[in-house]
Image (cartoon, rainbow, N blue to C red; front, top):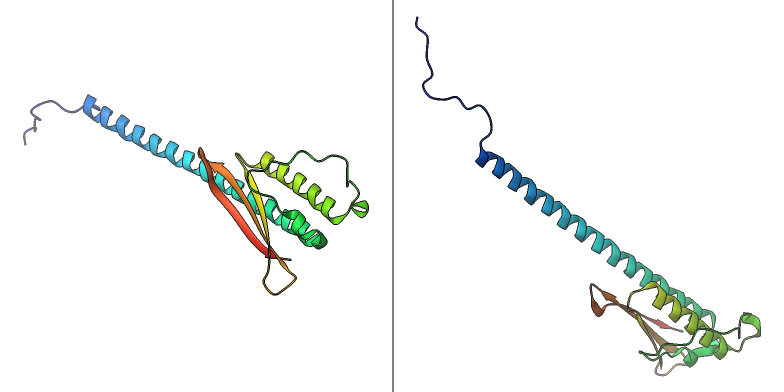
Length: 159
């Protein structure tokens, strides 16, 4: 039997084209991973802001429930930024309900503004027909991704 002889050259490694294909596939994979990470971080931040808004709105709702006698004193028009609270009403027992409501609104609004980017707040108080109850609408808006007021959380409660 004779020997078989291979005619032509044997391939000894990667060529330039194969190397470029592998590098481009790796680059696209890395870009995909970076895009996924960026989206994940943005979504986590938005979820954190929404959770903070829910918590802060619930905080004011509890303050309103605890001070039902103040009623209409909890009205807070939008675009109104209250001054930081002074020392009045530090002790709840000595406060009139309206003064406690003013202090609650000041503390709450400044907490919201500090916690959420570009935050705006409003509280609307309306009487409920045929009853002595009041309906409160608490709204928090904040900036997300450079769009002012793009996100909002609103709650309505009867007290």
